[in-house]
Length: 215
Image (cartoon, rainbow, N blue to C red; front, side, top):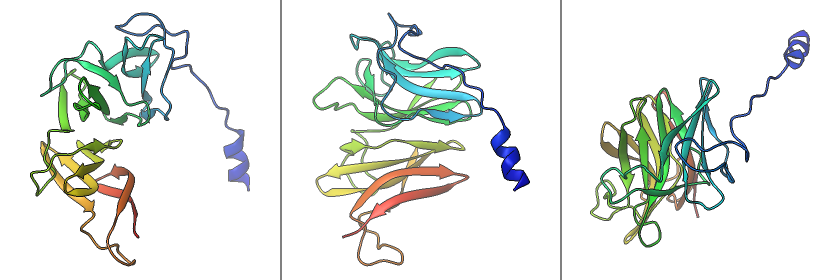
């Protein structure tokens, strides 16, 4: 009881990361959208997606000790792609891992054909983890859609789905190699039949947590 009372007595200190009056770093104007999903946070850093009223400057931004910086925006070339990013995903929060930020970025093309998961390190280098030109492990079929990434220890876990054949799962990227964590071919442990759908994922110390569903 005394520990509980002590815990509730600790005051919270709030700091503004960004709002509609905040100037967009490296861009024009102020934010008109700071994402529909929760921001990523680790060790005092905060990462989030945002854009201005015209949607001209959109990207992923990081806040560290009161300073806002660009992770990737519409001035950033797409690694292994064509042109610059045109938007980030407002529905999947960026994931922080030490000095690295994992995020979903979209490029020009039909139905965001250049959609991918990317990682930016503290030196500013952006690496493609996976995009819609990347074959699913064990197949020649490329990914068609991607879910929000989770990162830890230099590894990135993410949901991914293909159309032909229709298959999807949770996958892990490490040092340029992609492996299957769980997909539609795997039996449900302690359940009946195979997985038929997957939600979001998380990773910590090499352990991947999977949201999976069956028939």
